Image (cartoon, rainbow, N blue to C red; front, side, top):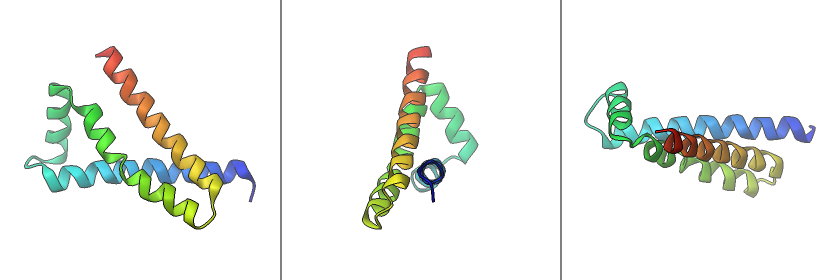
Length: 95
């Protein structure tokens, strides 16, 4: 496979892992529903923290790809993590 396709696959895996991690964190540690938790996080200014905690699952995907010698996919996961960090930074600056 070409490198660009591998990076895109890794990026998609990173976004899915981040989304799943955020939802998993909400389900495990919040007494509210998912939408209520998101709304409360936005109102209290904690949405960045919520997204950052969800990105922890990207570590598993990143090191998993490195372990099976899929370096380009690991780069895609890293790119997804950096995009998440930039979104959090923009949210913090604009809020």
